[in-house]
Length: 352
Image (tube, rainbow, N blue to C red):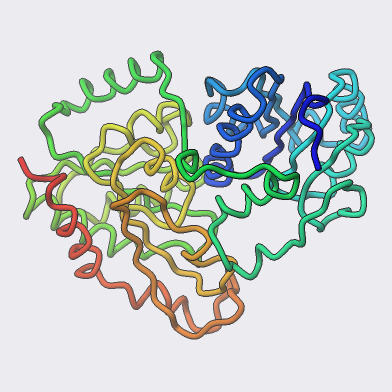
């Protein structure tokens, strides 16, 4: 059993993507409730720092940049000694990687808790890695790391949290003025990007849906993408009969959080911004492709009370993310009318 009196410094590590970090935020709140006077830090990648940089339950945010300044072995070893100087008592590793497990071992952190995968033998407290089975939600898998060391999780603390920064709010207000968006407008966000083809609904269907929303609900449509999906966003805009508002790779992550907060509804592929929307209370319609259990809505669905996800079971056991043998049937079977029906279920949010 964990001797809480000896835990003075805690490190949480989640160095992967946007949605993964957002779904890790409940663990920070639970830690603060259980270790009110301890120093709590979180280690993330530079790309996701804005999601936790002003979290009131954290004392420090540490960035580890494996693609740039910490790319080679020597820089990672130096980083391990940087952590060693912090004299951390326990590290909670939410996403296993070889690098992270080796670095925390070299840092001499006495308690290393995580999933038994990717050099899992270096951990002191292991959890069987069953995420690929998709038995429960990713948030619950994250909280299992706490349960492993005897910390019970209050249901009231199972809430996502992403901070809203004043400077980002000011930038979004300027964005609204530039694009002649009023607070009374029915502003609906569309996010057509995703990390792989098996998560991307067809651009022509996003375009058709957007035009119907403009025609039937007098909505204003804003298409948002990250830098890697600019061409996808541009394709949707070009296929539309009406002219949308676009923010294609132009917003910082913090600005995106603020924009999503001001939307009436957010319609997106299975991607990180879905979980941002859930965290700020914007209703979500999430379009899922992949059938493989560890990649399915059972593990990755949005968590808002009124959030909706659309998913078709087409019998796949293994998902080929880029070269599907059946032509991404899971996505093709989701029609525009089905997504429109989901919008109608959220009609109270888009009434004038």
